Length: 567
Image (cartoon, rainbow, N blue to C red):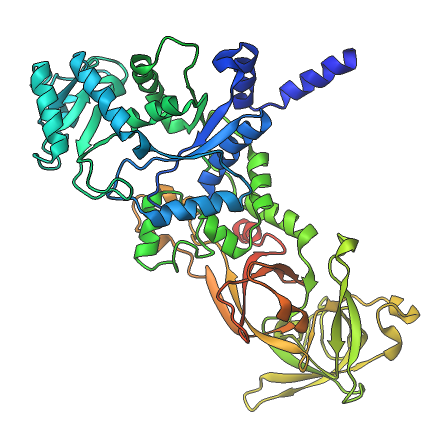
């Protein structure tokens, strides 16, 4: 009995604060024991890594407590919204491994919301204001000074009903009128100072066309949509905490006298170093061609991470590690990079690729001989088996792996020194050939036939191991070396600089003369690999027959921290 109690106590200690709220509500029998969440993106852009945190929470809570999570598009501003974004959002959620119970749209409730607004007008709780947005803002006051009432605040109810109807008939221009809630212009909560409920927008909606000329504001539409759907826990980021009293206020006016009401709970949003999360700034990057579209592998969008080679598991593991709190902070992007290294280490096959090739000729190896060697696919997972690699007299190695006059502790290829060629033989460098400008164009070595990997003499110790590919039995490839898009650690806070000034000039380096082993001719778009000694890569969907293109996901080690320590 004691062990069981201890186990239960440990389980409660491991709950995040949102799970603790949910369990408390279940224990009290609220909402008849139902758990229902929703993920409510606005379809005005592509989802980014910050949205992934919300997705994992909304869907994760529903899964953990046998509830359901719906996808609801907050499509209340037709000017910024598009079907393209609706489709991409669904694709991203599925890629992360989640499935919604139902798809809803805020536009499903436009008639109900309009009817509710009419009800509030009839009850004297809403009025049509003819002031400009600037005039309304000036009259709001400050947190320590009460606001000033609108001259239109006490219009007759019939006049308000007539004007609101005519607003929706398209009789008035955008910006000329709004519908405001009549609450309290002296409230210490600024959101209670007669907030705008509806504004005029004369722009076709992607679902409802030109049916509506007035559209609800977020604060009016969101809580009511939650209520119409039966949401029990409305999980939002911390900036909505000050909106919660207004959320509850409108629901209290709307709800029936029953046991059900949604509960809004706020959590910290995800902020990463060297990253911007603002949709406005991400859109600017795309529109100004500072990146190659929303799925550019340098973008923090979910489709950008997918194209770069991140896995759903690595993103979910990262989010699980950082957790959910009630205070905002900034997370080192190195933790996300560590998460993808950790995941790809156990799932990515090891292959050889030479990014900057120089020819190595094994002078004592038979000219026409082709030896088939075995390479283990992944030492972390024996079930992944092995593949064949061709070894020949002429190979490619990395140019950086040869130095003619090397310092004492240089353990790669240099004159008179032995190194092991991965999965093959120990070779000793005997010389090199240079062009007329003194650049090394070929390296020469001799091999010891007794030292092939797996033979008794292969145990002879040498300090360096190099990767290689056969010149004959390898494929040409383009490799795109992606790095962090911004040089600034916190670009979102650099208010005095243009976005372009903050970009890392080395965020993309394209190598067009690379060689990869033949095994990669079977690769499919998005397949993951570890290029030995170089990093994790995946096949880009731009690849075609005869033209392989690989994206670097991350290097094998975090080089940024070292550079930062030196600076």
